[in-house]
Amino acid sequence: TGNVTYDPGFMNTAATKSAITYIDGDAGILRYRGYPIEQLAAHSSFTEVSYLLINGELPTADQLETFDGSLRRHTLLHEELKGFFGGFPRDAHPMPVLSSAVSALSTWYQDSLDPKDDAQVERSTLRLLAKLPVLAAYAHKKSIGQALLYPDNSMNMVENFLRLCFGTAAEPYVPDPDVVKALDLLLILHADHEQNCSTSTVRLVGSSEANMFASVSAGIHALSGPAHGGANEAVLKMLREIQSSGISPEDFMEKVKNKEDGVRLMGFGHRVYKNYDPRAKIIKQTAHDLLAKQGKNELLDIAMKLEETALNDEYFISRKLYPNVDFYTGLIYTAMGFPEKMFTVLFAIGRLPGWIAQWREMIKDPELKIGRPRQLYMGETERNYPGV
Ligand code: CMC
Image (tube, rainbow, N blue to C red; front, side, top):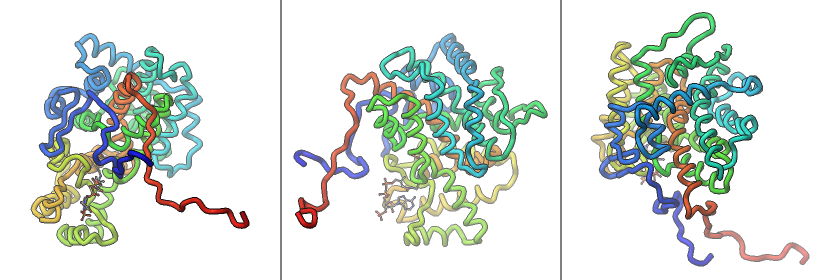
């Protein structure tokens, strides 16, 4: 195999140079294009952050207005594409429905598939950013058996998405401004995270010059796993199980530490952060603020107890395991009215501008090569077929 380095899980392999997101996992630092995540969370919007990640600079007021206007204009889906939702079983998980729908977009928008054509790349960027939340809302409506609504382009992306999920044709829907603000914030916090599993997938697929829709569809599949984006759903399942079984958080932690049945404390640990995830810090506060409005929340109490126990326990301290972005998000999404199956879909909506920015950076990279890892062959040496 020659000069091959064995690095399972790519723990030490930089597969690309990138100027988009900076993480210092030991110090708990995250910056998009140089801007600290705390400042963007406090002062920016998801639309502005999307522009920043994709274009490299914050937009002027005019640029932001034009960008936002384009996104509003691209929300409509082809009527035939809506029929596509009827082809899935009612209890389908919305993640595969979403990735299939994104894959299907490439069959309707064949004029924006060429990765080498800047105008086409720009069109597929706007189409994906505008249509993914609509597809996501339709996946939800499909699962609860309600009619699909048309987008209302007088609303911004987050308001529109909430209306498409929770509104009905029967009555006007007015989104709660606190929920709009909290969801916008969560989307900002998820918008990019350098070369994570789904982003690396988007880059690997795109490195073959597959189009942006195909690459993002693959990224959504990668995100669906419980070790990645699926963790937010797994956290809530874990909290509910603890609640319904009556096991104390301390006893549950003993099971985790003894690795009984491979049980892990979901929402804890991260490949890069060996410190408190800076996103989790911001989210924890949001969870408190939003849930406080709804009175006592037993699941939040369990989560806080688990966190407190973990942060003071040698098992977690020695392995540098801290809450990650997913530990509190599920509680917030529940308070907003989303079913558990939608949590990872919300992560996908947030991560989309990051996937697009990374795909576009890759396509323009003069050093781009098709992604093609090597292996250490461990199988049989040459042997003869019987009778030869
Ligand atoms: N609960 C209990 N033990 C853990 C946990 C956990 N959540 N995470 C890691 N460990 C232990 C693990 O058993 C191992 O112990 P030992 O050295 O005794 O074998 C040690 O910590 C190192 O773990 P690892 O699996 O080698 O670490 P990794 O970098 O390969 O995995 C991870 C990172 C995020 C997959 C892992 O921490 C995990 O499974 N966490 C729970 C799932 C989760 O919350 N995922 C969301 C990640 S953040 C959002 C995202 O990027 O999608």
